[in-house]
Image (spheres, helix red, strand yellow):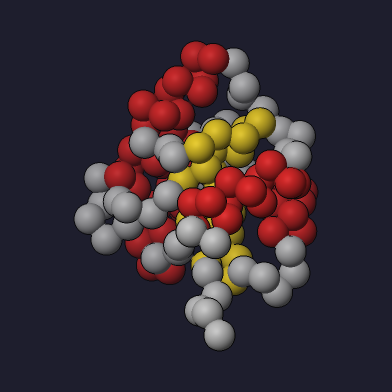
Length: 124
């Protein structure tokens, strides 16, 4: 039996967090959540997830800033990050990759696309 993977879902919208958790499939992954970028950095360091799903537009610290902070943190800098956001404009996608994300998905989320990217980055 393979070890369950832990995914950190970061979004200031409780609805978006629930939708992403549902998309990941009940019981398939251990899911932890954060409500903003600043909390995401703290939770990532504490929980050491296998993957992070990160919104962009959030209070306290946006997703781009949070990814940069995670990339600067030795214990979690290698954790893959998928930006999950309504901000699909090329300038935002480019900033996401410059911040250090591994992939980019726009909302409304296509569940099959998200799962495919999650599995790919987790090596499943």
